[in-house]
Image 1: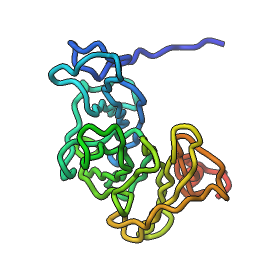
Image 2 (image 1 turned 120 degrees about the horizontal axis):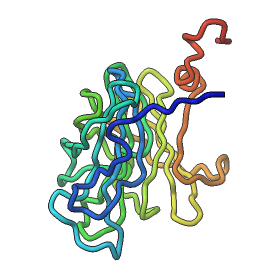
Image 3 (image 1 turned 90 degrees about the horizontal axis):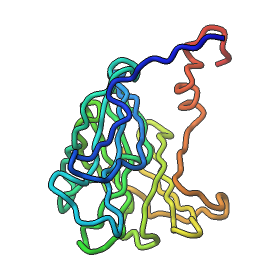
Length: 225
């Protein structure tokens, strides 16, 4: 069997500015409405790694318009409308609604600048992941004191109904769930669902319809529908 490896221009690479010693972490890949592949990653600083340098930190993206053969130069993501400024990580979960990408994210807790806690947030992008508009905090009380983290999975389950599952702790990972009936503008108070789901880390949730769409079953001749 003869194999052929195709060169990829632009990868591997680091989202950090050249002067930063830190590598990008926790990448997440999107298939944008225009067909581009978009990788989002955090340029993060962990305790003991030193102080931030100019241009360092935040969320960065690179995009490919040729099925991953070449990748653009990394650019820092612009977030709009976040209370208190700041942004998110965009490395959680997402779904498409026509030409709009909806993505869950960890938000810095704007109530306390020194807090390492985060809040579960929802963003949307109408320009294939280049800029992101804040939609809402997915905790109806903006009081996510159940964990120091807020990793989330999201799925659309109706015309305007969304479901989000939430990681509920660093050790036990107790699961929580919240719903929106208006495409993420407002949310129910998170309810604990440990009676049905024992634990999870970073959740990814899908309807069967969504999985069939991702697999291409609907468009591949001869496949079951």
